[in-house]
Image (cartoon, rainbow over all chains, first blue to last red; front, side, top):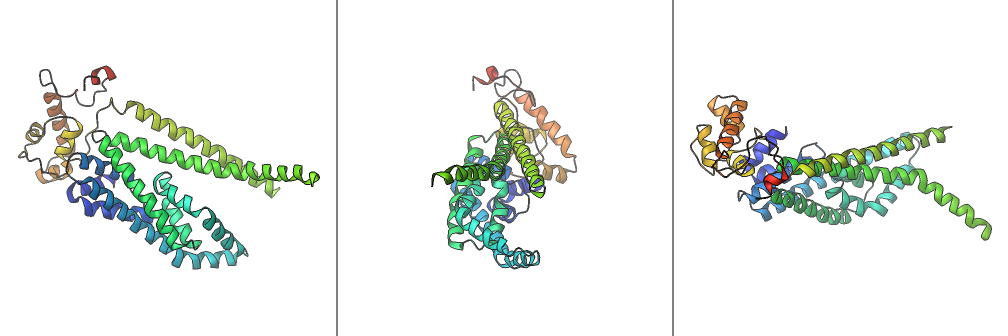
Length: 206
Length: 126
């Protein structure tokens, strides 16, 4: 699959880049890290214009993210409401909405460029949770621009080492996903316990 | 009981996440340490000018090695060139590797032999 995608990029340039990043942002697993790094390499070789490449990559990703958000908002929300209602946990959806509104901005921004494997899930979850579309698009544009600049510039700088650069960046992205999950589970395990202990210590002083 | 079960699952997930951080972090670090000293392997999606760029070799001998008219705007992947010439892509890759080795041989002053891991000392002159 990655061979065909990269061959299409080498042959058709921007249209192939736009199509692949859009589809990948919806949630189809495609080798976007390698694609963006190869794009940077092609820009370094003078085949593609670097500013055009950044613009096309960012626009394609934003378009895919909007589709993911729309699926979550108009397709997923009804499904989630029905499921949570059936399970007798209708308040879960409201909790999810509150959580998304509280942490949504940073979650959306970081999942565009740092913990990229989580990106499509965050789009879908933001739509389901009814996160404000205006705020979603603001954080989405900021994150996707940074993502395109970061990966294409890595490809530009390491234009003769694209496969190794992609391997480093891919591994780093998964390491950051691990950090995010460990932080979340650590907070669930120890954070709540700590706050309960603190409350118990403070209570006698009142 | 259910709470203990939930906490055990959370702790297991936490340990797995930490292990994943070390695993992927190590892999990233290992590749990064060797990034400058390893040659880029030729892949079927690469075009001849792309291969020439990654291996610091002139394009002309590479085109000639696979019997294609030299054209720096020819961006066809070697997979497509192989298909058009009814030749296995592995054979084209082998021919290209030989051409790179020849171009980087004694007196050419170009690059190291194909696929060879070269030391930082060899690279310091670049």
